[in-house]
Image (cartoon, rainbow, N blue to C red; front, side, top):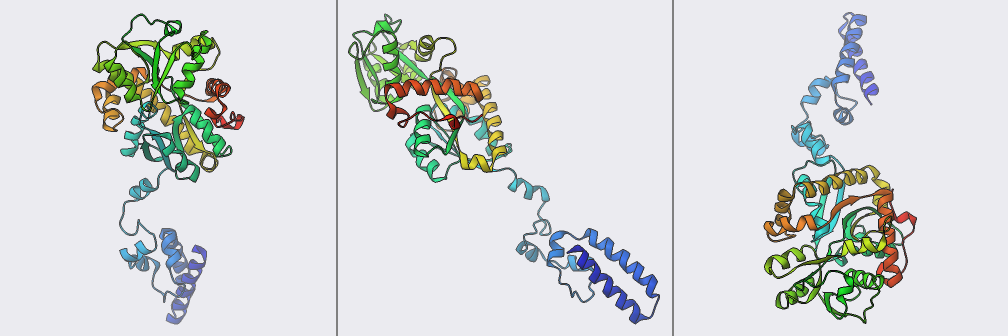
Length: 389
């Protein structure tokens, strides 16, 4: 286009020179030099809008006649007087839609949320936080979310529902389950014999974990009474009224319950109990993982890698700057009070694990759940393509 425009301008200059009857060769050379100079100064957008038969109007004058309205219609923000850096800032990075749960899995994400709000991230993030995983799965399956932070077994269920169209990119939270009681005689799993154990719903992660740990310690569900409640808050309420009762709670409910009732304390860390049973080199008790749609990953591999870097930095910030993170957690509505959050964060096992270490920890954990109930992981264990490396 530039070459064609330059030729037209040169032709006009030559014709004018001949008609004027003055120094055709000299004027042609001058016209050619002038046209070439103007051509280098005219933007691609203005050249695209120039009419070939410009009636001899010099290119410089024609570009000055472009109004702000015309420039806006032609998509030329720079010509419309908008700073070039604003244009690039608005269009910078890839838009990534992220869904997470209102709990420990989001605590390691709050610093990244703050950075995104300040436009200090490479990608452009849009965050959605919900109370339950079943609110995130339909959006992931329909393509309305690109990345989700969900419980480990739910990620396996999603993999099976999506027919393998998702991949796990990191572990964001290790075990957050603790046994809480006012009964100081309970020191280990064997001490639970004859006890009633309160926990959230049958067929949930706490249920599977407890059944596995009881079995590995020589006990069965016949040796204890499993009392199921619909929510962790209900378990906390039972403990508040009956401190000698035994409850299995996740963080931050553990911290909240112990803060409200000084008779309560943590009698067992189930993550430690799991590690003891598994032994060196075994699987880990995994709570939360981060999953990406493969369609989005295939189209935006660099954006996903960038998110992984920023997620790792955000998780590290949560562990290294507990007080600052507690304020962000409270502001996000994950925990109502910052003073409770500051006590809960160190006990939430916020982490960032990817690659081979992620696969070893997660695959072993899912295998344990599958042995107890295949439905807990969606009917089958994920294939190798589930683990992004």
